[in-house]
Picture (tube, rainbow, N blue to C red):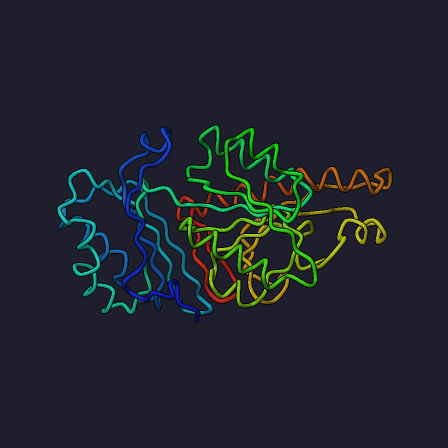
Length: 309
């Protein structure tokens, strides 16, 4: 069973930087994500621990994988009267985590994650993400956009997001990735979103951000992997087309799936119709995946995900 966090029981903390105006209106809550072997008493013990420290639980959700005998939980509580300073939470919670062999991580709703967006020529997904961010739907910081083309630069300028053009060709892939990684580290990026970025990332790149890169694929995976899925779907005369958002792994289009959606196709639809309808789906499934990640609603185990309500 894959662990929830490569950092183990210590988890990952997102300490509050200065965010956008809309972020300051967020509830001051903590979110605890748990993954562990299933057994009696987990929910009661966690709830009792929080109650003993004056936590007001505002949301709780759980899931049991009976086949794997594995338990998942997301619990969110108001920090207003919580008696444990957030930086001492690991020390206080460790006995509970050790008893139940938990992998866990803690986040705060008031702390925006820092998101980098990578894009190529097609900017429909980028435009959708930037609008949702501007309107406050995606509560995060977007310090930069990186592209191997210049098409999206006017859009980035409109939303006042720094744009970096790093060309990629077969002869400079390694150098291009070096520049990209340097920018990502400099801007302390938490999540990378591939908004129709039409380049394959190297294994070394992916390993630097495990389960922290979200891609949108213009197909209902596992069907029509790789290039030109709409063309292949049109040739097959499919009656449904779809789009998929997933985490990026070293295997192309094989990462854990986060969200999918479909639309019906008829014999009257031409290739151009499939592409247009597919673009609408791509925007939806990518924005949902990003929002769920930002709200700390996703747990990965094995090749699957749990998406909490």
